[in-house]
Length: 110
Image (cartoon, rainbow, N blue to C red):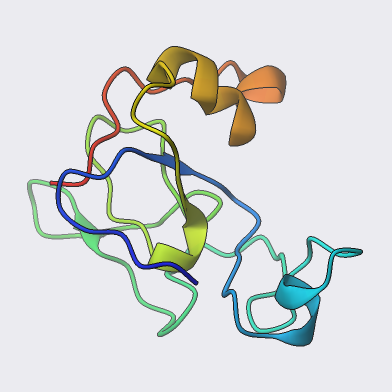
């Protein structure tokens, strides 16, 4: 997987891509065998949450990317780097923009 760095423009994707397993390296598959698709309220690598509410109670993740929130924490396996010349409101279709209408206004790594 190509790592992302501060300032890169990215799109969150709910189907993980580790870039290392046989499926990610295959031109015939898009389902990562290291991070298989599952409905889980946790971060994929360690099974924890990175979110808490104002009372300190744990808030669960949604589809590993939680992109319906203003800010989120996303595992790098759930990010795709895009060309900065592509407008984010168009590139969001790579994530899940068509089925959910979920397009990020500003999706730069901070």
